Length: 167
Length: 167
Image (cartoon, rainbow over all chains, first blue to last red; front, side):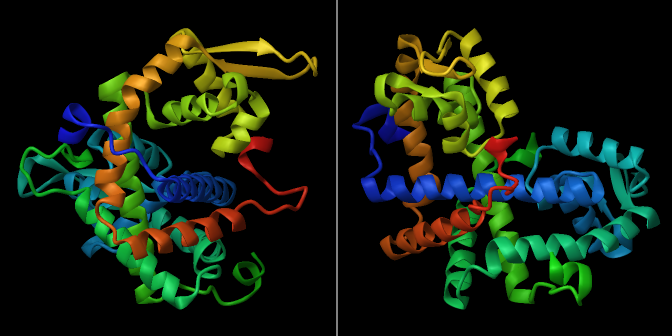
């Protein structure tokens, strides 16, 4: 924030403003679209679906809560809230961690796995229709690289970095 | 959803999964980062800031509520909630629309404009650091085109389309 505090603000050019606005529009619309699709098909928002996917890919379908927050890039409090709801649905179960008394695991239940199995085809189709069906193979490659660079920049290794899963 | 309902699901390839995951990571981290920055600097989330910006650029700093929802790509109920909070802060005022008795305008107050003026330099710096400082000019152009295509696809002109601002 050095420049912002001490110098002339580096305002966006017209072109940058157009790009930024398109980014806000596309990301807002896509998140709404996927929330809507998942609420309709499985009664859950997109973020819950992401947690179930993550657990389904973990060994023995379970993960440390701290690890799950880091992998899904959300805060611990948001994760706690979501897991409590998923537990109420019978899709996830929390259990104490054998190796660390303060730690907790989240485990995907059979029922949760079944919900995921049923919901995945419609969800992947929604993602395809909104993104992969619209872009050329070159654009898919470009988008991947751009998002990788941005995600990396937003996760500095500085131990004092203000990262969601450390809150 | 034809394919999802009647055929073999079109699962994502490994490369597509990597791109999709990078997209989710970058967009989730950036939204968290901007919410955090704006909460710290002005006590409001990113979505409220977007509403103030939109109003500040409108003639006489006022817009129809329906138009404001369409421009920011959010639902009417989400907009109502946000505007009620902004009104409480003294940053926005609602007024009945002279030309349409059922319509309402949202107007940016002088105080709201002042908050925006004070907050904009830090916000634009955060956006620059997370996006424009990281990408080459070619990538900025690619990102703009990709996001434009996606945003367009997510706003079909079909009169029955399930668009946020129609809800």
